[in-house]
Every structure is written in C-alpha cells, then in structure tokens.
Amino acid sequence: MKSTLITIHYDREIQLNNLLRGLSLGTNVPDEVIVINMGQKPNIYKDYNLNLKIEQIEGDDRARLPIGQSRNLGAKLASFETLHFLDVDCIPDKFYIEKMNDGLLNQNGLFMGTPKYLFDEVSEDFTFNELEKQSTEHHKRPSVKGIERSNDAGLFWSLCFSISRSSFKKLGGFDEGYYGYGGEDTDLSFTCKKLNFPFFLTEAVAYHQQHGFYKPPVDKLQAIVDNCNYFYSKWNHWPMDKHLKAFAEYGYVDWEENQKKPIKVINKPDQFSIEQFYIKDIPYA
Image (tube, one colour):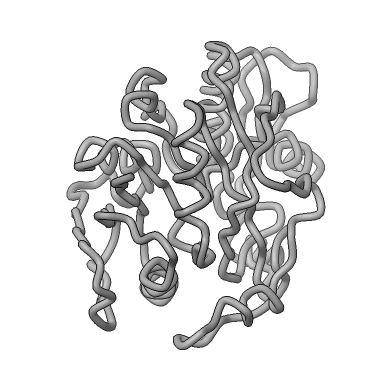
C-alpha cells in the first residue's frame, strides 16, 4: 500500500528530525513525506532516505498557525490514497505505519494511533526500546489492543491519525474556520459521528516528544475563545471545557458550562502572568 505522511512544522526543527528518523527506521516507510512549513524553513540534519517534500506557507496567516489549512494543503499535495497525519512532536514506533496501513486495508474509517508521552528529551541516535522505556500512556485514554471501534468523538486527537484521501475529501477535510490552537480536530470527529463514518482506535504507537507548555494554555487564550465560539455555533456544544473552566476561574473569560451566548475575554493576562502557568518537565497536562 503506497502512502503519504503529512506533518506540519513551526519552529520544531529537532523534533522534526527525530520524526523523520523514526520513519526511516520503520518496517514500512511512507512513499512520500510532506512537511507543511509555517515558520522558518527547517534544517534537515541528514539524508534519511525518504522522499521528502517541504512546502512553505507564505503570508501573514503563518503567525496564526493555520493548522487545518496546512493539513488540508498536505492532503491536496499528496500523491497517494493513504494519508498518515503525524504531529511534528511525534516519533512513530517501528511498526506504526505498518499497523495503520493494516487498518486501512481492511476497512474504511478514521484511524487514530496511541500516543505515548516521553519523560525527557531524546538523543538523536535514539532506539525504539529506549523510547518505550522512557514513555507513558495518557491516563485519560483507553488502552487499546489491535483495532477497536469507538463512538466517543472526544477521543480523537489529531496527533497521530490515518485516513484515505477520498474519505478525507468526502468529510470536507479540516474546517479552515479554526485558527491557532484547538477545535479543528474535535470538529472533524463530530463530522464523522454526524455522518456515521467509523472511528477506530489502534495500538500503533507514536511517541510524543516532551516540550514545555502552559497549564492552562493562557498563552493561547484568544485563539481558544475564538475557536470555541466557532465550534459552538456549529455544534451547540462547548469543546475544550477543561480549559474554559480554568480560564473562567482565573477571571479571564465569562464562561459557564450551560451558557448559550458567545464567550468574551474580560481580562487578558500580561506576559508575567502567562509565565506563571509555564510547566517545563512533565510529559503531559
């Protein structure tokens, strides 16, 4: 089965090279790898023996991190029917592509891998055994053996998933009305549920490389509010409720669980306040 792997990149050069190395060591290597670049063009440290293409998004929208638009562009540029989408912070396990291909060979659907979170930075000569020993599953996600169908749209995260190009097109791809952090992946899973398009969880492992983050993500406050308002206008449901609850508790937004009016930002944090929420060295929030 010929396939295309798509990742989007914004100032994650080391992580991108680790992703490419992981792909090159796999039992099944994608026939092409498309990097949609939203920032400075990355330096590729060595020849990973991959059919690698880097497409640069130009214009002011790059600063807003147009994630949905970038992934849609990758799908449009893909040469093959099988599409693997992988977050730039992920390193695919040795059998990742093989297992995802096996799923798509047997049935049509949206297939998500199993993210495992690394405790620390990895060396450039990492082994898969090291990654397995240095990682953990997310405690809020189910353990999966083989391939299991799920009716829980909230379990779909766009870190690591695969789908056929024709199905991706029929679903409409990612809604490009979302800008910046959050919402576009849950929107896609809600579309799947609405159309009764099957969603599967798989045991194919993608190792998420550790990086610092903000808890709650106050650095992305406005984008989250805008995307939540847009999502609610489509689905009559508030996504990212954990973040919204935290924002409300800190007095940044006027949100409560059952409200029907759009969220407003009532107090923007300054840079000093934002930095108080920074977490450097845990695998996930």
